[in-house]
Length: 230
Image 1: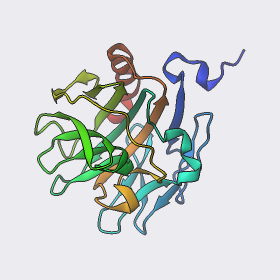
Image 2: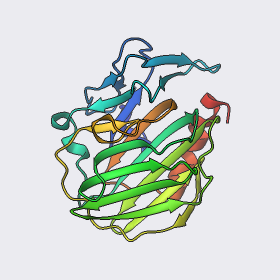
Image 3: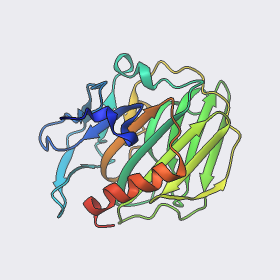
């Protein structure tokens, strides 16, 4: 008897799961039930196969490269009142400039974003007109040149940040519902392709209506870490 993808416990309420196994062209397959159409943007958007056999995308800021889901195709990720979670793996080439792993909105205007600062601090932000709230790690939490799994969750006023399965919050903000954002979703850059990332990315996932628990985050890390030699 087969079991549907979304029947596995960690896949409950998962609305996005970008798979890199196509390993050609500029399309990433969303294997979650929503099957969002995606596009890899940039002339140097490239694929790399790890020793484990897993394929990942390599993006360069000079182009810039990033993955985009158009606004009309990402309405279910226009989070306002509901809980949500994001998980992904990255191996950044450098931390010389601020870069956005995830964004659907504009800071202090609408939506939400996840930013890595030049000092290796990771920020999660929720935004409304002229204001924003943020939860952060300590400086140096993000390290260039190694694979890391990051998870960001939000439920009500509370956000959590996890690195490789462990809570790494340094300063906890009190979050307000993001203002509705009629914008594209970006993986690897800020809105409209600004402040792009520099490095390799894989296994982006998103859950709607669910903030992953610490136990679930640790379990996800243990399930995926061997792919990245961590």
